[in-house]
Amino acid sequence: MGEKRKIALTVNGKRYEEEVEVRVTLADFIRHQLGLTGTHLGCEHGVCGACTILFDDRSARSCLMLAVQADGHDILTVEGIAPSPDKLHPLQQAFHEHHGLQCGFCTPGILTTLIEFLRDNPDPSEQEVRIAISGNLCRCTGYQNIVVATLDAAKRLQAEPTQSQTNAAQRS
Amino acid sequence: MKPPPFRYHDPKTVSEAVGLLASLENAKLLAGGQSLMPMLNMRFVLPDHIIDLNRVEGLSHIRDTQGALDIGAMTRQRDLEFSEPVRARWPIMHEALLQVGHRQTRNRGTIGGSLCHLDPAAELVSLATGYDATVTVAGPAGQREVAFAEFPVAYMTPAIEANELVVGVRFPQWTPKHGYAFIEFSRRHGDFAITSAAVLLEGDAAGKITRASVTIGGMGTVPRRAREVEQAIVGQVPAGSFFRDACESCRKLEAIDDVHAPASYRQHLAAVLSRRALEKAHARLLDAHAGRPH
Image 1 (cartoon, each protein chain N blue to C red):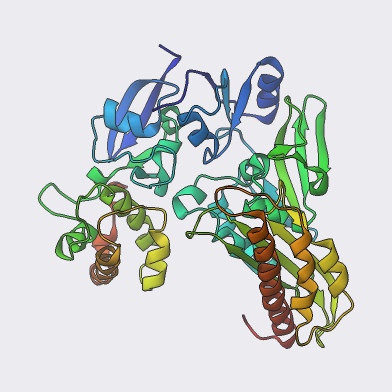
Image 2 (image 1 turned 45 degrees about the horizontal axis):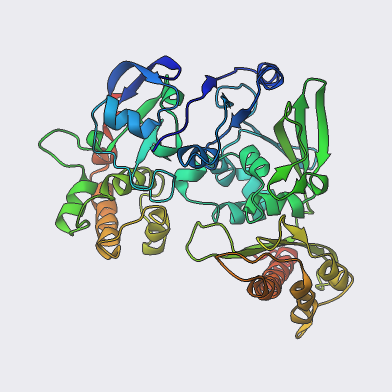
């Protein structure tokens, strides 16, 4: 076994204190050590975007970070997006209604990417949405319904601004 | 798939980082991780030590001072993208950054990491070439400055010693009424450019060009200034096929063959993209003089 370190971090509002091997990626740590398998790993070298999480409210590819780098930081994964166990986030609801996914493998990374995007750009054009998800590979949908769902989610979030808050923001 | 075993160090100061570099064998500096982490995951690199710069203080800043933009090496690409001074006075940097990877990678990727990785197709490397930027390097003997023209010594190899690290980079400012354009060709948005053209122009209200910087990226082992084009256009008022003719010399620039494109195609792109970038930059130059927004 290699060198280990103790880290303390917040994931989806819950505080964790864990010991990690320093070479373990943040993605593997989230999946294997915390058991949060909603974050998916596709390429593991920063191309597919499936492992996107929010790191201190900014989207990042968790396969391109080490778990030790998350010490003292705040992380949001797809498991933390919904406001409660029985209610979807408006973005998730829009994906559900518009069939914005087929196999669902890329969906966690797309949702986390779009949470940040719609926060920064609440009324985007179709072209802006397409650019925003250009770092997320989806091999099922052809992206069309993802774009439709995102534009609809933007409308819903503008109609109910309180819903635009992620769990992370609601906690603070 | 995960990185090979290494010892992890997270210094808090530049001098601590320099001390670690001096005392450790086979150490790699970790900046934003958008290039090194894939190489670790794929085990293309096998360092004994990783020196993580993410907790080093004083390396993340954007300062607009004395006609130059002073950028800390660990400044994230995203922070440059959203910087008001950059947008207002170094607008080509904003335009180029929108083509650097994706939001998820720009949130982590740093300017210092990009310049040191020195990919010949990297947008920020092209800009540093086009602006004649100055890199500040820290080592055991203190700091020294390196002109960007001297920075690349070979393919993806910067002119820094094993016990040194880049702490900042300075981009001079062009006159407020300059024209600019960054255009690249890539298969998908956010990919590294197969070839790119970065153009800066100064001139008068009548359209006469008084100063020009034309940089072709993604062609050779490092981005290159198209000096022949620059010389051909300074002092001229473009009309008709002027830019098209001037850019023909780009077809003679050194170009590499790889899986993405043969050299001859890159040379063709260099001529086409530099012409388009010059036309766009010149239109913006005229707009700036006429007070028109663009």
